[in-house]
Length: 110
Image (cartoon, rainbow, N blue to C red; front, side, top):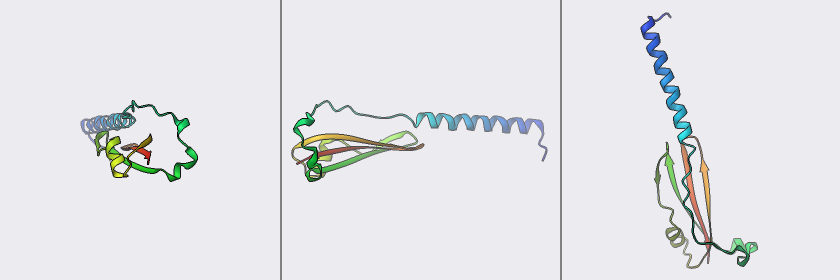
């Protein structure tokens, strides 16, 4: 099918802009949001062999197309949900896909 030159040029420009747009989305979706935890825990005092006996709480925030985060993953909320009164240590877990990411906060304690 032969299109007039002006239509094929416009179509080519639209395709080029779309490819650039998809490339930018791919670059933007590689960002990471990490909140620094300022409290330092001496892990020598924590018996990691007993990790299965500790209570574990996890809350997550999600981003879609790098818009968000949606949800709440504060240390206090995570500990309250797991009925933890004494926090032993905190960990983070990040799962990233092209258009979606999941940032979780994991709290261990008694």
